[in-house]
Image (cartoon, rainbow, N blue to C red; front, side, top):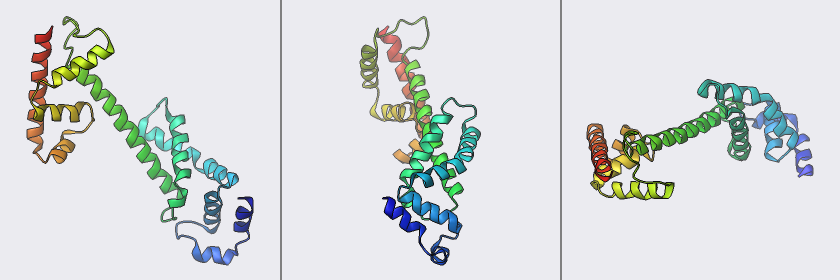
Length: 202
């Protein structure tokens, strides 16, 4: 690998200028080639130059989030793994912005899904005055499945897609090829049916 990296540094500068992508300077293009070859110094240079940008972008997207430092490392890990696919059709900064945005979007969807699950579970335990239908996580899971199995398949499908998969009403509408109004109506009816079943089981 060392010999390969060293050979890149001996490439004629005129050749580099002729073949460098329009968004990269000759120096950036040469560094990108070294990074693709696994040169630790080149990778460190990219990290040092864009670390503040990535972290600031994450802060703007998420606010003062406790996971920002970890997410910054994740962004660079993904970027370095994807170096061979980066052809320089954008600046390195713009490319990293895209990876940062995608990483943030995935995190938000994961959190959104977790929140939806919490909301879903509340439909099975409507108030503190109602006795819980199960005493441990395994029993609770089995009870949830039992109750879901008792509602109509079309209502259950919408409930699961919304609360457990984290899809929006619009996304479910597209998945099921049904109007948003129909999806909303089914979700409302599924919730009511579940409330009735929970009330009957306590």
